[in-house]
Length: 412
Image 1 (cartoon, rainbow, N blue to C red):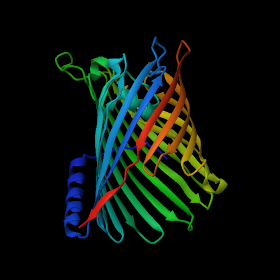
Image 2: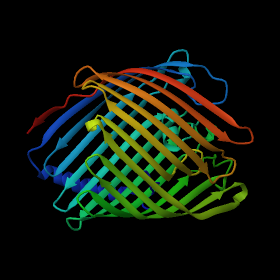
Image 3: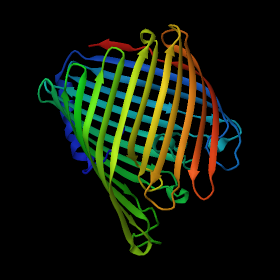
Image 4: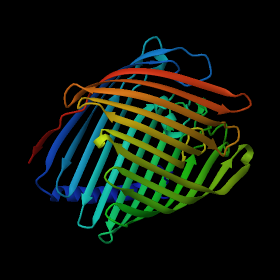
């Protein structure tokens, strides 16, 4: 289940307090295990329309190396994780597509008898070609994008069958040369609370309340815009998932949720004019999975209606269907089929609603427990609802080599 998540307070105080508590717990606990798990992936791809555009374009050939590692320190009550990653795509004859992507993820957990505190934070520098489509279903202009996320969390076991989860996410996204491209830097906050009750050993019921705020920067030069009134905007969302269920048995599992959403969006335009859009909407979704052939074949499917931030300066509402089938042919050979259908819309005028379709197939062969080779094919289409019915399509073929990583550890 993917939901729009926002924050109503700054992350500094919560993050520092939680980090101090986690750090104190780490130093007080002994018998720690230190471990490192490296991973490597190198692939080459042929892409007929990498920007998924209706404009003239060429087929590109790329080499994409990626390395990373998970560094971990764990005790009975504390866990610390660090994960640096680097990816450097290169395209022959299309140097303008080259970029460097790197990130750093930090995670911490402090476990008591009934209480668990957590802190997740990460920094990521990537290209809009890799980030915007997955987030909003909208392929943007190619720009470098920096994102920072800080997310403290708390889980409290009220009884053996009841649990309360509290969470907060602070997200800051900035684009390189955002003003010239038409994209906007933004800040996204999400705070939510979830109550979960175990109905039985295999089923759970839950209810969630969430509040979010989405603020878009006014990127116009202050000399040209001394009153700071040109095209800034903000949105506030509040929703309650009034019904939720999760269940499973030996072969099947599933979940469903439904709720109401109230949203207010304010757009500040040139000369100080301001307009607001508000309304009540719905949020709902479901997912299911089923195992065939003694677990060798697994089917998965899901639908969700959600709201997500967009570099175009407004939030994007989206309906998304996913379905897939995975099959383990032998102990070494696996195959996967997947399909995704995504419809997106914004409340801002002048923005086209879009539909994105993608189907892909992957075969992976394990050379040993850590090394594997794979081949992948994907076909994708994106259509734009505008005066002219435009549709762009894309074919991608990739071959790669992966190292899953042997865990190296020492206890002291």
